[in-house]
Length: 236
Length: 329
Image 1 (tube, rainbow over the protein chains, first blue to last red):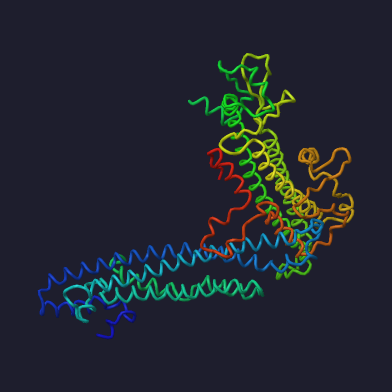
Image 2: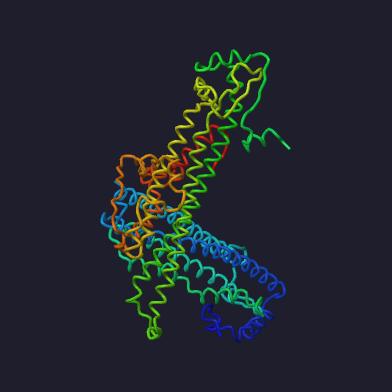
Protein backbone atom coordinates (compact mmCIF):
# COMPACT_ATOMS: atom_id res chain seq x y z
CA UNK A 1 0.00 0.00 0.00
CA UNK A 2 2.78 2.42 0.89
CA UNK A 3 4.48 1.65 -2.34
CA UNK A 4 1.38 2.49 -4.31
CA UNK A 5 1.13 5.84 -2.66
CA UNK A 6 4.51 7.03 -3.79
CA UNK A 7 3.83 9.73 -6.38
CA UNK A 8 5.10 9.19 -9.89
CA UNK A 9 4.70 5.45 -9.62
CA UNK A 10 1.11 5.83 -8.60
CA UNK A 11 -1.26 3.98 -10.88
CA UNK A 12 -4.56 5.78 -11.29
CA UNK A 13 -6.55 2.60 -10.67
CA UNK A 14 -7.59 1.67 -7.15
CA UNK A 15 -6.65 5.12 -5.94
CA UNK A 16 -10.06 5.78 -4.45
CA UNK A 17 -10.12 2.48 -2.62
CA UNK A 18 -6.79 3.22 -0.94
CA UNK A 19 -7.86 6.68 0.00
CA UNK A 20 -10.94 5.55 1.72
CA UNK A 21 -9.02 3.13 3.90
CA UNK A 22 -6.62 5.87 4.91
CA UNK A 23 -9.44 8.18 5.49
CA UNK A 24 -10.95 5.63 7.78
CA UNK A 25 -7.78 5.74 9.89
CA UNK A 26 -8.27 9.40 10.38
CA UNK A 27 -11.84 9.10 11.32
CA UNK A 28 -10.62 7.02 14.17
CA UNK A 29 -7.69 9.24 15.12
CA UNK A 30 -8.76 12.82 14.59
CA UNK A 31 -11.55 15.32 14.44
CA UNK A 32 -11.73 14.43 10.84
CA UNK A 33 -14.30 16.69 9.24
CA UNK A 34 -12.21 19.70 10.16
CA UNK A 35 -9.10 18.06 8.83
CA UNK A 36 -10.74 17.08 5.60
CA UNK A 37 -11.97 20.60 5.12
CA UNK A 38 -8.45 21.99 5.61
CA UNK A 39 -6.94 19.44 3.24
CA UNK A 40 -9.38 20.26 0.50
CA UNK A 41 -8.55 23.92 0.86
CA UNK A 42 -4.85 23.25 0.48
CA UNK A 43 -5.40 21.04 -2.53
CA UNK A 44 -7.49 23.76 -4.13
CA UNK A 45 -4.64 26.21 -3.57
CA UNK A 46 -2.28 23.78 -5.22
CA UNK A 47 -4.56 23.41 -8.18
CA UNK A 48 -4.45 27.20 -8.57
CA UNK A 49 -0.69 26.95 -8.62
CA UNK A 50 -0.81 24.33 -11.32
CA UNK A 51 -3.02 26.62 -13.36
CA UNK A 52 -0.35 29.28 -13.09
CA UNK A 53 2.24 26.73 -14.17
CA UNK A 54 0.06 25.98 -17.17
CA UNK A 55 0.02 29.66 -18.09
CA UNK A 56 3.80 29.82 -17.82
CA UNK A 57 4.05 26.75 -20.02
CA UNK A 58 1.81 28.38 -22.64
CA UNK A 59 4.18 31.33 -22.65
CA UNK A 60 7.03 28.85 -23.01
CA UNK A 61 5.36 27.50 -26.16
CA UNK A 62 5.06 30.96 -27.66
CA UNK A 63 8.72 31.61 -26.94
CA UNK A 64 9.60 28.24 -28.41
CA UNK A 65 7.94 29.21 -31.70
CA UNK A 66 9.80 32.52 -31.77
CA UNK A 67 13.06 30.82 -30.88
CA UNK A 68 12.71 28.30 -33.69
CA UNK A 69 11.87 30.86 -36.32
CA UNK A 70 14.80 33.06 -35.32
CA UNK A 71 17.10 30.06 -35.17
CA UNK A 72 16.05 29.08 -38.70
CA UNK A 73 16.73 32.62 -39.89
CA UNK A 74 20.15 32.55 -38.27
CA UNK A 75 21.08 29.19 -39.72
CA UNK A 76 20.00 30.13 -43.23
CA UNK A 77 22.21 33.20 -43.06
CA UNK A 78 25.11 31.17 -41.67
CA UNK A 79 24.68 28.59 -44.39
CA UNK A 80 24.85 31.11 -47.19
CA UNK A 81 27.73 33.12 -45.72
CA UNK A 82 30.28 31.04 -47.58
CA UNK A 83 28.48 31.40 -50.91
CA UNK A 84 28.15 35.16 -50.64
CA UNK A 85 31.79 35.55 -49.66
CA UNK A 86 33.06 34.22 -52.97
CA UNK A 87 33.40 36.83 -55.69
CA UNK A 88 32.91 34.29 -58.46
CA UNK A 89 29.31 33.75 -57.39
CA UNK A 90 28.25 37.31 -58.05
CA UNK A 91 27.57 36.94 -61.77
CA UNK A 92 26.39 40.19 -63.31
CA UNK A 93 26.43 41.92 -59.94
CA UNK A 94 30.22 41.92 -59.95
CA UNK A 95 29.94 44.97 -62.18
CA UNK A 96 28.85 46.83 -59.06
CA UNK A 97 32.04 47.51 -57.19
CA UNK A 98 32.07 46.63 -53.54
CA UNK A 99 28.75 44.86 -53.61
CA UNK A 100 30.23 41.66 -52.20
CA UNK A 101 31.42 43.37 -49.04
CA UNK A 102 28.17 45.26 -48.75
CA UNK A 103 26.05 42.13 -49.03
CA UNK A 104 28.21 40.24 -46.55
CA UNK A 105 28.16 43.23 -44.20
CA UNK A 106 24.39 43.47 -44.39
CA UNK A 107 23.96 39.78 -43.74
CA UNK A 108 26.29 39.95 -40.77
CA UNK A 109 24.23 42.85 -39.44
CA UNK A 110 21.07 40.82 -39.76
CA UNK A 111 22.75 37.85 -38.13
CA UNK A 112 23.88 40.01 -35.26
CA UNK A 113 20.35 41.31 -34.77
CA UNK A 114 19.02 37.76 -34.79
CA UNK A 115 21.61 36.65 -32.24
CA UNK A 116 20.66 39.54 -30.00
CA UNK A 117 17.01 38.68 -30.24
CA UNK A 118 17.80 35.02 -29.54
CA UNK A 119 19.58 36.15 -26.39
CA UNK A 120 16.54 38.15 -25.38
CA UNK A 121 14.32 35.14 -25.94
CA UNK A 122 16.66 33.09 -23.75
CA UNK A 123 16.30 35.68 -21.02
CA UNK A 124 12.54 35.26 -21.22
CA UNK A 125 12.90 31.50 -20.98
CA UNK A 126 14.99 32.06 -17.88
CA UNK A 127 12.22 34.24 -16.49
CA UNK A 128 9.78 31.36 -16.86
CA UNK A 129 12.15 28.95 -15.13
CA UNK A 130 12.53 31.42 -12.26
CA UNK A 131 8.82 31.81 -11.89
CA UNK A 132 8.31 28.02 -11.88
CA UNK A 133 10.95 27.85 -9.20
CA UNK A 134 9.13 30.46 -7.16
CA UNK A 135 5.80 28.67 -7.53
CA UNK A 136 7.43 25.48 -6.25
CA UNK A 137 9.10 27.25 -3.34
CA UNK A 138 5.91 29.02 -2.32
CA UNK A 139 4.03 25.76 -2.50
CA UNK A 140 6.38 24.19 0.02
CA UNK A 141 5.52 27.02 2.36
CA UNK A 142 1.89 25.96 2.16
CA UNK A 143 2.57 22.71 3.94
CA UNK A 144 5.80 23.36 5.83
CA UNK A 145 5.53 26.93 6.92
CA UNK A 146 2.28 26.68 8.83
CA UNK A 147 1.96 26.20 12.55
CA UNK A 148 0.75 22.65 12.09
CA UNK A 149 3.49 20.39 10.83
CA UNK A 150 1.97 17.72 8.63
CA UNK A 151 3.14 14.16 8.94
CA UNK A 152 4.29 12.07 6.01
CA UNK A 153 1.06 10.19 6.28
CA UNK A 154 -0.95 13.34 5.99
CA UNK A 155 1.07 14.45 3.00
CA UNK A 156 0.24 11.23 1.26
CA UNK A 157 -3.38 11.34 2.24
CA UNK A 158 -5.76 11.26 -0.72
CA UNK A 159 -9.35 12.39 -0.61
CA UNK A 160 -11.41 10.77 -3.32
CA UNK A 161 -9.82 11.40 -6.70
CA UNK A 162 -8.11 14.50 -5.39
CA UNK A 163 -4.32 14.41 -5.48
CA UNK A 164 -2.32 14.06 -2.30
CA UNK A 165 -0.24 17.00 -1.15
CA UNK A 166 2.87 15.00 -1.97
CA UNK A 167 1.62 14.57 -5.56
CA UNK A 168 1.26 18.31 -5.83
CA UNK A 169 4.70 19.07 -4.38
CA UNK A 170 6.43 16.50 -6.54
CA UNK A 171 4.58 17.62 -9.65
CA UNK A 172 5.63 21.21 -9.20
CA UNK A 173 9.21 20.19 -8.53
CA UNK A 174 9.33 17.95 -11.59
CA UNK A 175 7.90 20.61 -13.88
CA UNK A 176 10.45 23.10 -12.63
CA UNK A 177 13.29 20.62 -13.10
CA UNK A 178 12.22 19.75 -16.63
CA UNK A 179 12.05 23.35 -17.73
CA UNK A 180 15.26 24.22 -15.98
CA UNK A 181 17.20 21.45 -17.73
CA UNK A 182 15.63 22.36 -21.04
CA UNK A 183 16.59 25.98 -20.52
CA UNK A 184 20.20 24.95 -19.86
CA UNK A 185 20.24 22.83 -23.02
CA UNK A 186 18.78 25.60 -25.17
CA UNK A 187 21.11 28.16 -23.77
CA UNK A 188 24.17 26.02 -24.52
CA UNK A 189 22.97 25.56 -28.11
CA UNK A 190 22.29 29.25 -28.60
CA UNK A 191 25.60 30.31 -27.07
CA UNK A 192 27.38 27.91 -29.43
CA UNK A 193 25.87 29.61 -32.51
CA UNK A 194 28.50 32.35 -32.90
CA UNK A 195 31.25 29.73 -33.00
CA UNK A 196 29.43 27.88 -35.80
CA UNK A 197 29.62 31.06 -37.88
CA UNK A 198 33.38 30.69 -38.33
CA UNK A 199 33.17 27.12 -39.61
CA UNK A 200 29.64 26.42 -40.67
CA UNK A 201 28.44 22.92 -41.19
CA UNK A 202 24.88 22.43 -42.25
CA UNK A 203 24.57 19.08 -40.51
CA UNK A 204 25.56 20.65 -37.19
CA UNK A 205 23.02 23.39 -37.61
CA UNK A 206 20.36 20.91 -38.63
CA UNK A 207 20.88 18.55 -35.72
CA UNK A 208 21.06 21.38 -33.22
CA UNK A 209 17.82 22.69 -34.63
CA UNK A 210 16.24 19.25 -34.22
CA UNK A 211 17.34 19.26 -30.61
CA UNK A 212 15.66 22.62 -30.11
CA UNK A 213 12.47 21.32 -31.69
CA UNK A 214 12.39 18.09 -29.68
CA UNK A 215 12.85 19.60 -26.22
CA UNK A 216 14.06 16.25 -24.83
CA UNK A 217 13.88 17.41 -21.22
CA UNK A 218 10.16 18.12 -21.37
CA UNK A 219 8.52 14.82 -22.32
CA UNK A 220 4.94 15.68 -23.24
CA UNK A 221 3.39 12.48 -21.83
CA UNK A 222 5.03 12.95 -18.44
CA UNK A 223 3.80 16.51 -18.24
CA UNK A 224 0.27 15.48 -19.12
CA UNK A 225 0.43 12.66 -16.59
CA UNK A 226 1.25 15.11 -13.84
CA UNK A 227 -1.63 17.36 -14.80
CA UNK A 228 -3.97 14.37 -15.08
CA UNK A 229 -3.26 13.44 -11.47
CA UNK A 230 -3.74 16.96 -10.19
CA UNK A 231 -6.95 17.60 -12.11
CA UNK A 232 -8.30 14.06 -11.98
CA UNK A 233 -11.67 15.25 -10.65
CA UNK A 234 -12.19 17.46 -13.72
CA UNK A 235 -11.81 14.45 -15.98
CA UNK A 236 -14.37 12.29 -14.23
CA UNK B 1 -14.94 69.35 -39.51
CA UNK B 2 -11.65 71.15 -39.26
CA UNK B 3 -11.08 72.62 -42.72
CA UNK B 4 -7.67 73.97 -41.97
CA UNK B 5 -6.11 70.73 -40.89
CA UNK B 6 -7.89 68.93 -43.68
CA UNK B 7 -6.31 71.19 -46.23
CA UNK B 8 -2.89 70.89 -44.71
CA UNK B 9 -3.02 67.13 -44.81
CA UNK B 10 -4.38 66.73 -48.30
CA UNK B 11 -2.20 69.42 -49.76
CA UNK B 12 -4.61 69.83 -52.63
CA UNK B 13 -4.48 73.60 -52.30
CA UNK B 14 -1.68 74.77 -54.49
CA UNK B 15 -1.54 78.24 -53.08
CA UNK B 16 -2.52 79.93 -49.90
CA UNK B 17 -3.79 83.46 -49.64
CA UNK B 18 -2.92 85.48 -46.64
CA UNK B 19 -3.51 89.16 -46.09
CA UNK B 20 -2.01 91.33 -43.48
CA UNK B 21 -2.52 95.06 -43.30
CA UNK B 22 0.71 95.92 -41.54
CA UNK B 23 3.01 94.52 -44.23
CA UNK B 24 2.47 95.52 -47.84
CA UNK B 25 3.41 93.13 -50.65
CA UNK B 26 5.93 95.65 -51.77
CA UNK B 27 8.08 95.45 -48.66
CA UNK B 28 7.91 91.69 -48.74
CA UNK B 29 9.17 91.51 -52.29
CA UNK B 30 11.87 94.05 -51.92
CA UNK B 31 13.71 91.84 -49.55
CA UNK B 32 13.52 88.65 -51.58
CA UNK B 33 17.01 87.23 -51.65
CA UNK B 34 17.94 88.78 -48.35
CA UNK B 35 16.96 87.42 -44.93
CA UNK B 36 13.25 87.61 -44.17
CA UNK B 37 12.05 90.15 -41.67
CA UNK B 38 10.17 88.70 -38.68
CA UNK B 39 6.85 89.82 -40.17
CA UNK B 40 7.63 88.24 -43.52
CA UNK B 41 8.77 85.05 -41.88
CA UNK B 42 5.52 84.95 -39.98
CA UNK B 43 3.61 85.06 -43.24
CA UNK B 44 5.80 82.64 -45.10
CA UNK B 45 6.08 79.98 -42.45
CA UNK B 46 2.57 78.47 -42.29
CA UNK B 47 2.28 77.60 -45.98
CA UNK B 48 5.89 76.43 -46.06
CA UNK B 49 5.30 74.19 -43.04
CA UNK B 50 2.12 72.78 -44.54
CA UNK B 51 3.91 71.95 -47.75
CA UNK B 52 6.86 70.29 -46.02
CA UNK B 53 4.57 68.16 -43.89
CA UNK B 54 2.77 67.00 -47.00
CA UNK B 55 5.90 66.22 -48.96
CA UNK B 56 7.52 64.33 -46.13
CA UNK B 57 4.49 62.23 -45.43
CA UNK B 58 4.50 61.40 -49.15
CA UNK B 59 8.14 60.36 -48.80
CA UNK B 60 7.27 58.18 -45.84
CA UNK B 61 4.47 56.45 -47.70
CA UNK B 62 6.73 55.94 -50.76
CA UNK B 63 9.21 54.26 -48.48
CA UNK B 64 6.52 51.87 -47.25
CA UNK B 65 5.44 51.25 -50.82
CA UNK B 66 9.01 50.44 -51.78
CA UNK B 67 9.42 48.08 -48.85
CA UNK B 68 6.30 46.10 -49.67
CA UNK B 69 7.11 45.89 -53.39
CA UNK B 70 10.63 44.85 -52.57
CA UNK B 71 9.55 42.08 -50.25
CA UNK B 72 6.97 40.90 -52.78
CA UNK B 73 9.69 40.91 -55.40
CA UNK B 74 11.93 38.84 -53.19
CA UNK B 75 9.40 36.09 -52.81
CA UNK B 76 8.69 36.10 -56.57
CA UNK B 77 12.42 35.91 -57.24
CA UNK B 78 12.77 32.98 -54.84
CA UNK B 79 9.90 31.12 -56.50
CA UNK B 80 11.33 31.86 -59.92
CA UNK B 81 14.73 30.51 -58.92
CA UNK B 82 13.15 27.39 -57.41
CA UNK B 83 11.11 26.72 -60.54
CA UNK B 84 14.17 27.20 -62.70
CA UNK B 85 16.42 24.97 -60.60
CA UNK B 86 13.77 22.24 -60.47
CA UNK B 87 13.76 22.17 -64.26
CA UNK B 88 17.52 21.90 -64.31
CA UNK B 89 17.53 19.03 -61.84
CA UNK B 90 14.60 17.24 -63.45
CA UNK B 91 16.74 14.82 -65.52
CA UNK B 92 18.56 13.55 -62.43
CA UNK B 93 15.55 13.61 -60.12
CA UNK B 94 14.43 10.32 -58.63
CA UNK B 95 10.77 10.01 -59.51
CA UNK B 96 10.19 6.62 -57.89
CA UNK B 97 7.18 4.79 -59.27
CA UNK B 98 6.35 7.68 -61.56
CA UNK B 99 9.46 7.27 -63.64
CA UNK B 100 7.76 4.91 -66.10
CA UNK B 101 5.05 7.34 -67.04
CA UNK B 102 5.46 8.58 -70.57
CA UNK B 103 6.99 12.03 -70.94
CA UNK B 104 6.62 12.76 -67.29
CA UNK B 105 9.87 14.69 -67.07
CA UNK B 106 9.07 16.68 -70.15
CA UNK B 107 5.61 17.57 -68.93
CA UNK B 108 6.92 18.50 -65.49
CA UNK B 109 9.51 20.75 -67.08
CA UNK B 110 6.92 22.47 -69.22
CA UNK B 111 4.77 23.12 -66.22
CA UNK B 112 7.71 24.42 -64.21
CA UNK B 113 8.67 26.67 -67.09
CA UNK B 114 5.19 28.15 -67.18
CA UNK B 115 5.44 28.77 -63.45
CA UNK B 116 8.79 30.40 -63.92
CA UNK B 117 7.36 32.75 -66.54
CA UNK B 118 4.49 33.63 -64.26
CA UNK B 119 6.86 34.52 -61.43
CA UNK B 120 9.01 36.46 -63.82
CA UNK B 121 6.13 38.68 -64.83
CA UNK B 122 5.23 39.16 -61.17
CA UNK B 123 8.84 40.05 -60.42
CA UNK B 124 8.85 42.61 -63.22
CA UNK B 125 5.71 44.18 -61.90
CA UNK B 126 7.21 44.42 -58.41
CA UNK B 127 10.18 46.12 -60.00
CA UNK B 128 7.82 48.49 -61.76
CA UNK B 129 6.13 49.32 -58.45
CA UNK B 130 9.53 50.10 -56.98
CA UNK B 131 10.26 52.53 -59.80
CA UNK B 132 6.89 54.17 -59.23
CA UNK B 133 7.75 54.60 -55.56
CA UNK B 134 11.07 56.16 -56.50
CA UNK B 135 9.44 58.51 -59.03
CA UNK B 136 7.01 59.70 -56.36
CA UNK B 137 9.86 60.18 -53.93
CA UNK B 138 11.72 62.35 -56.41
CA UNK B 139 8.58 64.38 -57.09
CA UNK B 140 8.15 65.02 -53.38
CA UNK B 141 11.80 65.94 -52.99
CA UNK B 142 11.52 68.51 -55.80
CA UNK B 143 8.37 70.13 -54.43
CA UNK B 144 9.56 71.29 -51.06
CA UNK B 145 9.85 75.01 -51.72
CA UNK B 146 7.28 77.69 -51.12
CA UNK B 147 7.22 80.75 -53.40
CA UNK B 148 5.59 84.11 -53.23
CA UNK B 149 2.81 84.35 -55.76
CA UNK B 150 1.75 87.29 -57.93
CA UNK B 151 4.63 89.65 -57.11
CA UNK B 152 3.98 93.24 -56.05
CA UNK B 153 0.97 93.84 -58.28
CA UNK B 154 -1.40 91.82 -56.18
CA UNK B 155 -2.86 93.42 -53.07
CA UNK B 156 -2.83 90.03 -51.36
CA UNK B 157 0.23 88.19 -50.25
CA UNK B 158 -0.12 84.74 -51.74
CA UNK B 159 2.09 81.74 -51.83
CA UNK B 160 2.55 79.10 -54.43
CA UNK B 161 4.47 75.85 -54.66
CA UNK B 162 5.41 76.58 -58.27
CA UNK B 163 8.17 79.07 -59.03
CA UNK B 164 7.02 82.20 -60.88
CA UNK B 165 9.77 84.70 -60.29
CA UNK B 166 13.39 83.84 -60.86
CA UNK B 167 14.61 86.12 -58.10
CA UNK B 168 12.56 84.13 -55.58
CA UNK B 169 14.05 80.74 -54.91
CA UNK B 170 11.32 79.73 -52.52
CA UNK B 171 13.53 78.75 -49.63
CA UNK B 172 12.57 81.63 -47.37
CA UNK B 173 16.17 82.85 -47.62
CA UNK B 174 17.31 80.11 -45.35
CA UNK B 175 14.85 80.89 -42.57
CA UNK B 176 14.22 77.90 -40.31
CA UNK B 177 10.81 76.54 -41.30
CA UNK B 178 9.95 74.94 -38.00
CA UNK B 179 12.63 75.30 -35.37
CA UNK B 180 16.10 74.74 -36.74
CA UNK B 181 16.13 73.39 -40.28
CA UNK B 182 15.80 75.51 -43.40
CA UNK B 183 14.29 74.28 -46.66
CA UNK B 184 17.68 73.36 -48.20
CA UNK B 185 18.38 71.16 -45.14
CA UNK B 186 15.13 69.29 -45.70
CA UNK B 187 15.98 68.97 -49.37
CA UNK B 188 19.41 67.58 -48.63
CA UNK B 189 17.96 64.92 -46.36
CA UNK B 190 15.39 64.01 -49.01
CA UNK B 191 18.08 63.86 -51.65
CA UNK B 192 20.14 61.55 -49.52
CA UNK B 193 17.15 59.22 -49.33
CA UNK B 194 16.51 59.42 -53.05
CA UNK B 195 20.13 58.61 -53.86
CA UNK B 196 20.03 55.48 -51.71
CA UNK B 197 16.93 54.21 -53.42
CA UNK B 198 18.28 55.09 -56.87
CA UNK B 199 21.41 53.01 -56.33
CA UNK B 200 19.33 50.17 -54.99
CA UNK B 201 16.98 50.33 -57.96
CA UNK B 202 19.91 49.86 -60.26
CA UNK B 203 21.03 46.72 -58.43
CA UNK B 204 17.47 45.43 -58.56
CA UNK B 205 17.35 46.04 -62.30
CA UNK B 206 20.50 43.96 -62.78
CA UNK B 207 18.91 41.11 -60.85
CA UNK B 208 15.57 41.30 -62.66
CA UNK B 209 17.39 41.35 -65.96
CA UNK B 210 19.51 38.33 -65.10
CA UNK B 211 16.62 36.31 -63.76
CA UNK B 212 14.58 37.08 -66.84
CA UNK B 213 17.05 35.22 -69.03
CA UNK B 214 17.39 32.21 -66.75
CA UNK B 215 16.50 29.01 -68.55
CA UNK B 216 15.57 30.57 -71.87
CA UNK B 217 16.81 29.40 -75.22
CA UNK B 218 20.00 30.93 -76.54
CA UNK B 219 18.12 32.58 -79.42
CA UNK B 220 15.82 34.32 -76.96
CA UNK B 221 18.74 35.51 -74.87
CA UNK B 222 20.39 36.97 -77.93
CA UNK B 223 17.41 39.26 -78.34
CA UNK B 224 17.46 40.18 -74.70
CA UNK B 225 19.57 43.18 -74.22
CA UNK B 226 20.61 45.07 -71.14
CA UNK B 227 19.56 48.29 -72.85
CA UNK B 228 16.08 47.11 -73.70
CA UNK B 229 13.13 48.07 -71.59
CA UNK B 230 12.02 45.51 -69.03
CA UNK B 231 8.48 46.84 -69.35
CA UNK B 232 7.12 49.38 -71.77
CA UNK B 233 7.67 52.90 -70.51
CA UNK B 234 10.51 51.89 -68.23
CA UNK B 235 12.98 54.28 -69.81
CA UNK B 236 10.63 57.24 -69.36
CA UNK B 237 10.52 56.47 -65.67
CA UNK B 238 14.26 55.90 -65.47
CA UNK B 239 14.93 59.15 -67.32
CA UNK B 240 12.85 60.96 -64.72
CA UNK B 241 15.10 59.44 -62.06
CA UNK B 242 18.24 60.48 -63.98
CA UNK B 243 19.10 56.85 -64.54
CA UNK B 244 18.62 57.00 -68.29
CA UNK B 245 19.71 59.53 -70.85
CA UNK B 246 17.14 60.07 -73.56
CA UNK B 247 19.78 61.83 -75.67
CA UNK B 248 22.36 59.07 -75.82
CA UNK B 249 19.83 56.30 -75.15
CA UNK B 250 22.00 54.84 -72.46
CA UNK B 251 21.43 53.77 -68.93
CA UNK B 252 23.30 55.86 -66.43
CA UNK B 253 24.44 53.82 -63.45
CA UNK B 254 24.29 55.85 -60.25
CA UNK B 255 27.40 56.52 -58.27
CA UNK B 256 27.44 54.39 -55.20
CA UNK B 257 29.28 55.75 -52.24
CA UNK B 258 32.91 54.86 -52.75
CA UNK B 259 31.95 52.36 -55.40
CA UNK B 260 32.22 52.17 -59.11
CA UNK B 261 29.56 50.63 -61.22
CA UNK B 262 30.34 49.55 -64.75
CA UNK B 263 27.77 48.91 -67.35
CA UNK B 264 27.48 45.17 -67.53
CA UNK B 265 29.02 43.81 -70.68
CA UNK B 266 26.60 42.09 -72.99
CA UNK B 267 27.27 38.75 -71.42
CA UNK B 268 25.39 35.58 -71.97
CA UNK B 269 23.57 34.69 -68.82
CA UNK B 270 22.54 31.12 -69.42
CA UNK B 271 25.27 29.80 -67.15
CA UNK B 272 23.70 30.72 -63.86
CA UNK B 273 24.95 28.47 -61.10
CA UNK B 274 22.89 27.70 -58.07
CA UNK B 275 25.31 29.72 -55.96
CA UNK B 276 24.95 32.76 -58.19
CA UNK B 277 21.19 32.54 -58.02
CA UNK B 278 21.44 32.34 -54.25
CA UNK B 279 23.62 35.43 -54.25
CA UNK B 280 21.07 37.26 -56.41
CA UNK B 281 18.24 36.51 -54.05
CA UNK B 282 20.39 37.41 -51.03
CA UNK B 283 21.48 40.66 -52.67
CA UNK B 284 17.85 41.50 -53.39
CA UNK B 285 16.97 40.87 -49.78
CA UNK B 286 19.94 42.74 -48.37
CA UNK B 287 19.11 46.10 -50.02
CA UNK B 288 22.75 47.05 -49.60
CA UNK B 289 22.29 50.66 -50.63
CA UNK B 290 19.58 51.45 -48.15
CA UNK B 291 20.26 51.87 -44.44
CA UNK B 292 23.95 51.57 -45.21
CA UNK B 293 25.10 53.20 -42.05
CA UNK B 294 24.00 50.88 -39.34
CA UNK B 295 26.22 51.59 -36.40
CA UNK B 296 28.42 48.83 -35.15
CA UNK B 297 28.31 50.15 -31.60
CA UNK B 298 26.09 47.27 -30.64
CA UNK B 299 29.02 44.89 -30.81
CA UNK B 300 30.50 46.60 -27.81
CA UNK B 301 27.37 47.16 -25.81
CA UNK B 302 24.69 44.63 -26.57
CA UNK B 303 22.59 45.88 -23.69
CA UNK B 304 22.24 49.26 -25.29
CA UNK B 305 21.18 47.95 -28.61
CA UNK B 306 17.87 49.66 -29.08
CA UNK B 307 19.36 53.09 -29.23
CA UNK B 308 22.22 52.11 -31.48
CA UNK B 309 20.33 50.25 -34.17
CA UNK B 310 19.16 53.45 -35.79
CA UNK B 311 19.90 53.10 -39.44
CA UNK B 312 20.24 56.06 -41.72
CA UNK B 313 16.77 55.98 -43.32
CA UNK B 314 15.06 55.74 -39.98
CA UNK B 315 17.39 58.40 -38.64
CA UNK B 316 16.48 60.82 -41.43
CA UNK B 317 12.78 60.33 -40.80
CA UNK B 318 13.22 60.76 -37.09
CA UNK B 319 15.22 63.98 -37.51
CA UNK B 320 12.53 65.37 -39.78
CA UNK B 321 9.68 64.02 -37.69
CA UNK B 322 11.08 65.58 -34.55
CA UNK B 323 11.49 68.91 -36.29
CA UNK B 324 7.92 69.03 -37.56
CA UNK B 325 6.33 67.13 -34.65
CA UNK B 326 5.11 64.30 -36.81
CA UNK B 327 5.71 60.64 -36.17
CA UNK B 328 6.57 58.89 -39.42
CA UNK B 329 7.25 55.41 -38.13
